[in-house]
Each structure stands twice: as structure tokens, then as C-alpha cells.
Image 1 (tube, rainbow, N blue to C red):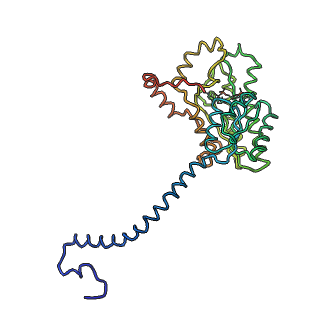
Image 2: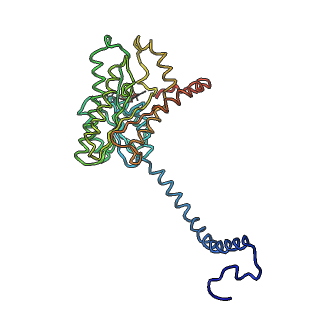
Image 3: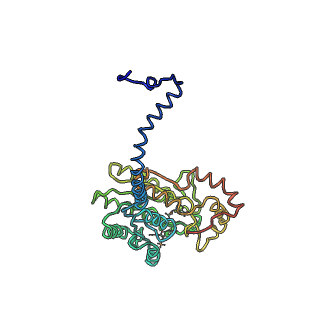
Length: 334
Ligand SMILES: NC(=O)c1ccc[n+]([C@@H]2O[C@H](COP(=O)([O-])OP(=O)(O)OC[C@H]3O[C@@H](n4cnc5c(N)ncnc54)[C@H](OP(=O)(O)O)[C@@H]3O)[C@@H](O)[C@H]2O)c1
């Protein structure tokens, strides 16, 4: 029989088993696949290097490409680590602290063209205003303002504390953050350019964290949370994100006393053990600072991220005996 809808079965003079017929049907469909593969292979061959280049390109571009960031107190410790991480992700940064020598020395560690330096004491509002002006003058915009600069008390109980020193800590940590936030927001209101501000949490921020002997520091870090969330709410209708970052415990100049007070000497051993268990390199906090600064980092206005959250805390506590046993306690200072 010719014409019509002819099944394979009709061509066969012999009655073949069902399984065999299905196999020949599959073979005939793979017959059409062959030319497709024939044309697809060379296309894939030529496309591969292009996709490879694209993949490489996304790596070259970085998460913060063309962003401009001011990081206060970035001549050492956590601030410097954040500046380095930002530059690695393609950002331009402003290295800044109270001390010209520190600024110049730190600047020399950065690749040419990736950073500028500016002396700025964050406790002085006119200094911070100048910092924003210089940044915009040099790079054209300001995308990120990281209020990182901070100092701590030198382990005194309140009766032994010096009222001036106590107030100075408030001026740098809390008022300094207020100054940075205010100056950066003024820039945003003038230009409409989207802006992210990251403030530094610390001991005292979380409800359960008590701070005996460093009461000024603890008070500023507790206030930091209230301040950050209040400003986040005030500017929630704007293309602005104000967030809080807890860098965890990092061995830096801040955690090491140049001239330990008697109280500090008494606390030293306990504190060293706490550091042995919970301290981490500043790169952990810096990676979070990159996530918070990046457009695709998944963070939003009013967020609070910690480099020492419950999960991380449990992990460090669990691994401590093993790290101790195998001499793997990291005692480097940054
Ligand atoms: N280390 C920790 O375990 C830890 C834990 C929680 C939170 N934090 C927070 O993280 C931030 C950085 O701490 P860190 O441990 O990296 O401290 P750090 O090593 O002592 O560095 C502090 C930085 O702030 C600068 N600075 C101090 N006073 C300043 C001022 N008035 N104006 C401008 N810059 C000033 C210092 O530079 P100059 O001396 O050259 O001015 C330095 O660059 C602080 O806000 C701190 O509270 C730290």
C-alpha cells in the first residue's frame, strides 16, 4: 500500500517484535539530530571563547566597579581591610584619619589611581564636610560612606575615669558617625545621587552585650544602633541605605593597650582567651562590607549584619579545642 499515513510496521514484510519497532523509530529521530549536532558543534566551538571572555569580564568588573567610597579611620585595622576589599572589587577609595603620616603611609600600599588620601578628624564637622568635598572634587561622585573611625576607653571603672577622655570617645565614635552621616546625606540631597552609609557596631550594640570598664565605648555602640535605625527610617523614601555592620572581634590596635591600666592587666588573661576563641581576621568584616555596598548584595536600608553572628560564634566555639590542640590559634594583629 502506498500513500496515506504509513507506519513503520507497514514497510516490514515480516512481523517484527514491538520493542524492535520502537528502536528503529528512535533511530530515525536521531537521524535528524545528527545534522543539528553537526552545525551546533562549530557554533559552540566559536561561542566558548566568547562566553569565557564574558565570564572573565564579569570577574574583572568587580562588585563595586566605578563606586566611590569614603572609609573613615582607614589607615589601619578594619578600616584599611575594608578599603583594600573595596579596591579589589573595583572601587575608588578615600583613605583618611587624623594623622597625615598614617594617611600617606597607608596610601602608598594602594595601586596608583585607586585611592586618594585626606586628613580628617571625624570629631570636627568642618573636617568631614571638607572630606566629602575633596572626594567629589577628585572622583566626581560619592556612593559609599563608611563611618568606621573609632577609639575605646583604656579599661577604667567610672570613678577612675577622666571626664574629658570619656567625652572624647563620644565625640569620635558617636558624633563622628553623626558628622559623616550628615555630610554624606547633604551631598545626596544636593545631587540626588544614590548613597549607602555603613555605621560600625561593636560591644554594646547588641542587647545582651555589656561593657564594664569601657562604658564610654559601649554607650557609643549602643547608641549607634538607635542612630542608624532612626536615620534609616527618616530617609526610607529616598534612594539611600543606612546600615549597621558589626565587624566581630578583630585583634587590632584597639584591642591592644599601649599602656595597660591596672584594671586592664587584671582582665588581660580573660580577654586573651576570648580573643583566642572568637577573634577573626578583618577580611571577614570586609567581605560583609562589600556585600552591603554592592548593588546586588541583597541588603537594604536599615539592615544590620554581623561578622560574629550566632552561627559563626557557635562554629568558633566548637573549633576552639581543635585549633588549640593543633596550634592553629590566629594571634596576628591587624
Ligand atoms: N577591633 C575590634 O575587635 C572591633 C570590634 C567591634 C567593632 N569595632 C569597630 O571597628 C572600627 C575600627 O576598629 P579597629 O579595631 O580597626 O580600630 P584601630 O585599629 O584602632 O583603627 C582605628 C582607625 O580610626 C582612626 N581614627 C581614630 N580616631 C579618629 C578620628 N578622630 N578621626 C578620624 N580617624 C580616627 C585611626 O587612625 P589615626 O590614629 O591615624 O587617626 C585608625 O585608622 C571602630 O569603629 C571599632 O569600634 C572593632
